[in-house]
Image 1 (cartoon, each protein chain N blue to C red):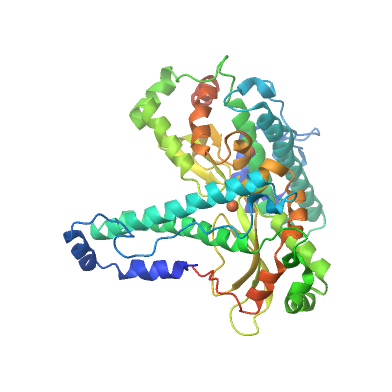
Image 2 (cartoon, each protein chain N blue to C red):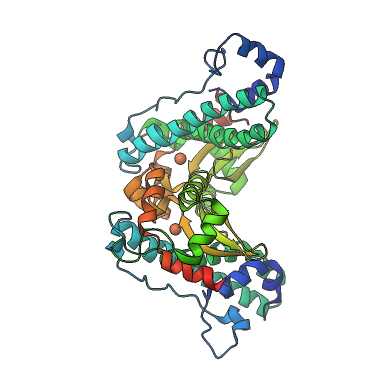
Length: 233
Length: 243
Ligand SMILES: [Fe+2]
Ligand SMILES: [Fe+2]
């Protein structure tokens, strides 16, 4: 088992496990996740299903090319680590930690993202209800205030990154957080809904008008998925 | 081009007393009215379509007319807000605004350097013989021009997220050449001289290359302005890239 990996990226390791992003390929316990291989998950809808809010072309490139690149990068980082540790070269194994964080984070984030989106003609859009609505009202004042704060957070990202609605498990409250590049949400935070603010997520359709993308995406947020994550957290 | 250094010096000079007298005169916080230099979008030294087919006109127009303009607009806005925050003694707002100034100021400086270090493919400026001394120094440093080119391209492709790749000359006389990358809109600092830079934000290539950023990196070599690079290397350039 990869002790170096444990030391260098405990947070990511937890996130990878919690997200179920890695499938063990052998008859190994989940603890031997290093032997697992990440695979590109199928989208739960067609590439064109989120139109007109997110174009089919964006979805296809985003899933088939960008997400696939993170999956490949993650698997190659894991292989390098396993190989280096097999040779007892721990410093080499540790040097791969930034790649593991980047590609592992990219894989986790996009996997969560596809699932918290849905076509506007199906579960997408609208407002949350039940316990989730209650929690949002009590922690943000109202759904509208929450939405505005999330859009402000997205607009404030300097460079590439993500904004997330999370549940802080220790405090029991909902929070908004942003993460740079592909840094995953970790620690006491459980990701409930994430929005990709990388330019590749909107540029072909919205170009420099990212505020329009941040407005439009609410039409395809899958509150059923978000509520399920909230209840499980 | 105005250096960001000027901005910081200016900010440091804004004592509450000075601002108070400005406020007493009844003016709003308008940088121009206050006689303070505002930043302006520099004109491109070539047409939007001049870098085709390596960088499309559509990319250039959005990149210069929208993205760079937004950095300039937000930089000027943040400077005005900063003056107001100083006058109001709002320290938290000042700290928050410094981050905004750093980001947008960096965006302005980086793009200004970038436009100048590009030129239409096939033009005299893109010929390597325009940079005899620089190329000699590159060959001394990397052992060969192609080795340097590969190292630079690799550094560009390894950037995680948004950022820039730069060839710089270290501060001081006899300073060596280095390949450095900076994240988001962080500028090159520490007195190092930018020889040339390449924008690796997705907006710099996505409309044409999409996820194929390796092709963008390969093609950018066709539009590097080696004359600008040589001028910067030899200290003949007036441009500043100091934070
Ligand atoms: Fe993405
Ligand atoms: Fe740019």
